[in-house]
Image (cartoon, rainbow over the protein chains, first blue to last red):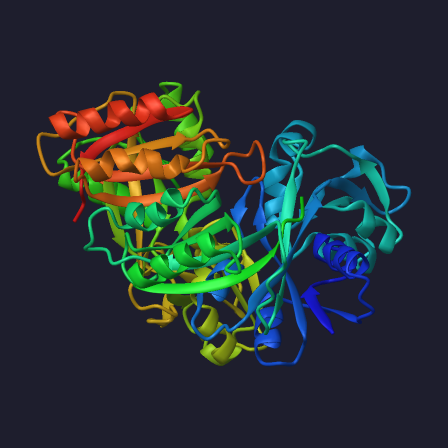
Length: 277
Length: 277
């Protein structure tokens, strides 16, 4: 069973379908209501795999996912990543015209990503947040809202029998969301893999982060991502999410990982997996 | 005039009052509707000072603030920081009892910060997002909602004549939000100051971030914060917000700043100001 952040018709469900297809896996997939339910469900053994968004190209990291992966009690590994192109559409019930739209529903990130379009075309419309883009589309159908529109994907419009009023409405044309597949067992692909980890540094140590990144730099390992999140303990205390090219099966990366682990306050390997691009 | 993120009664207005009081400034303060309006208003010269939230101890950076400060067309400097303790209360109209509450309104961050309490005490209540904690409290009064509660500050309850149903409802007891005051002119305090900057690194450069942090490390300058945000250009491209102890009036820090600037793709000094703690 592959659990994912639902409802069906979201970008997450596209990512789930893409993963099952490329892996040629014949698995049922199950939409859940929150990222927390997906991660806790795989962690407790209720589902074999879980798929959640981890990063958006414009908005940055998905805080809930990052914070839950960093927790000590989450004992899961990333085994795959899937990039999905985010292409927002303005969606309405069949027959509804642009000029009839008084209210626009979507997920807060999607609304933020279409700000300029909304300000220009709908300066007087009400802009309302709901829990997902698919929820916004479904709401129009369920409540038969004829003076409203939703921002969502082509797939979600098709799924609920709605119509695309306008495409290309995002402020930035190019936008990707990265999803990860989580499982209990660490997997180590043969080659062209990336390693993800999270760590924290003792605050009183001068040059703390610099000293940790040094282990990657001296080994000439390419760091492909670094993202900080508050540790939630003290203002100014951070944990760092780092991705780098290489796997613990290789000598260089194995040594760098060992060195990092020895010099960090807290260190957790988050997974080793093939790049999606 | 000091513009701040309104409405009156939010944590932002507490921060504005604290700033004017500690600086003994006799200035009018003006609540605006969005962070964007505050920053654009100071940038265009409509207001002398602007006050916006920049970071929360639990949730991390305030994306809109960081993204707008990093923009080339924003020509503003941070001249002060103010930390405000966030103490969420469950607030309702006078006479309303806990067991009558069916809906709970607040800002999404405040709702996230009280998740455990809400799940335990109100497993069946509707949880609804509005644009600020003060807006949530005002909504109860304006619409005379007697089966609802809001999460907000003691100040907002007092302001609108509402009652605190429960205190200490946040999952983490300690929580701070940091606000900054923005102005057109760079100020450099004599001593005990922090310098904030933002930069990006050429992606093709191996060890890019490490090489930049080296300028601080070799000068034994203490980096107090590092935070990454997507550059919004390409997935995996980041800009970095860095704070360090010291001012460009000091030789060591001036040299490190110059070196960083020379080796970055993009570099912007965000301000020099005294620590609030």
